[in-house]
Image 1 (tube, one colour):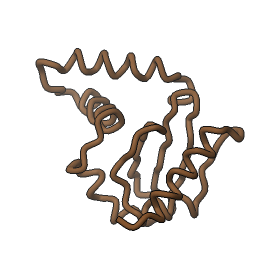
Image 2: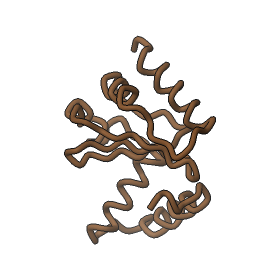
Image 3: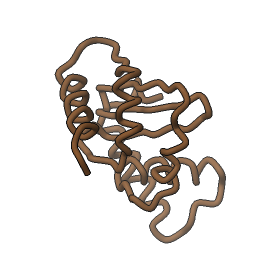
Image 4: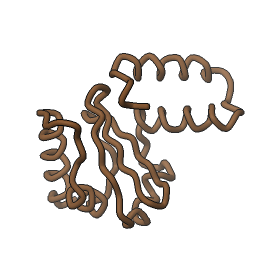
Length: 129
């Protein structure tokens, strides 16, 4: 789905979802999933369960860049998915970033955005915390 989105589409979708759930809670499962994923994407929270589960994300994973919307996606064989905006910093563990680098970023064609993202993750993964 992200292949067909550009950044403006993604931001408009986030605005629509925020307006829709400003005064009510999402009740339908698909609404909940959309709300949670977009909130994680635009407003990362260190206390979110997904970030705490990173220590269990050591199974083989795929790391992909959707450059039209500036999102990178990490997924594991166990069904864990993390969508992240390229320019934001997320609470990734050093171990997960190292695995991401080892499994290499998948891109349709080489781009400056992919190179910058790889450098950023490499620097973060090798920084002492």
